[in-house]
Length: 84
Image (cartoon, rainbow, N blue to C red; front, side, top):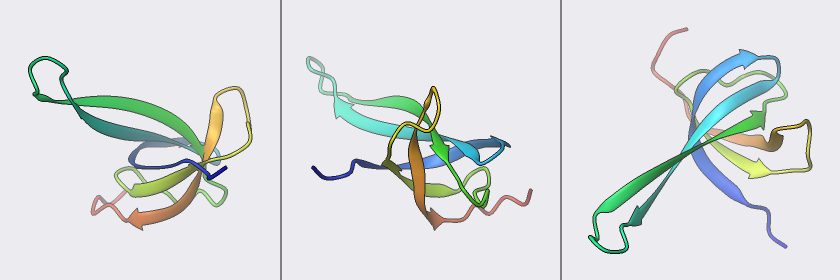
């Protein structure tokens, strides 16, 4: 079975080896056909703590690492221009 992957933006990196990634999915409204945006937050494992707020990352599904953490950062797609 293939590994699930999602692209999102890091919105928090205040935990040790963990980042919060916001993933947006777009879908048409069933009646009005307006494009709707659904946002979901995932806790992802960041082993080297190299992600910063605003980075665009690829996360992939992994075994449960804690109560809420089931995703890990596969790679950083683009760095944020924010200086932290």
